[in-house]
Image (spheres, rainbow, N blue to C red):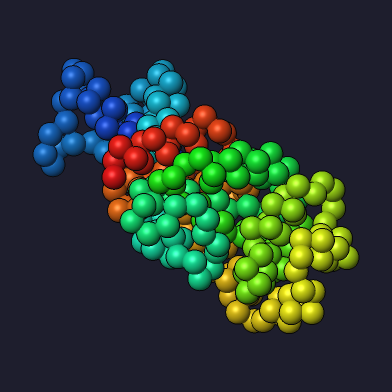
Length: 261
């Protein structure tokens, strides 16, 4: 916990303790009123009450933690609502599945090509793209696990210009172990991409900006790992963040989004 949060938490404890102590005083034989109130006696009474009832410290901290969690959840949901149009766009990602008015639900996946859980989810996601005719999938590169992940992300984004993003994406997801530049290029070549054009597109400064924007959004909505899924009804009536891979939770969220749209 940071120094600021520790100070804030302790302040909350003291406020809660003071409130409890004050209620004890008001119900006790000691009488404090108006200008006759003895501050030192009041503080001593509160101190004594806390020492005799130390459990109120834990209770106050628990209450503070609950309030902080609620505030953070509300902040993240507000931020997510603001970022949703950008997350659903194709400028910084790649869209598969349902298109246009047919799309009732959107699933946005933030991933890293060195993420084992992302690879575990890949086949499932591919099946859902084939079978869920009202679900749009948006892929967003979040290369945070290894230095080599950034190269993989840029190569994948560059593949969009050749219309081969999905081929390369699933080929990279299917590859185990370290993906260095040579191995990524070999996979891209086998997937039918022109390496010369791919490298020219990969060197574009625009791709650095794409990755930076995605990272900024991830931080703003509290995502710190991959894979992370954002499920939303396309009208924005429903949003839910699943910051890990869980097929059942993903299915439940998709159904909830359908019902909300």
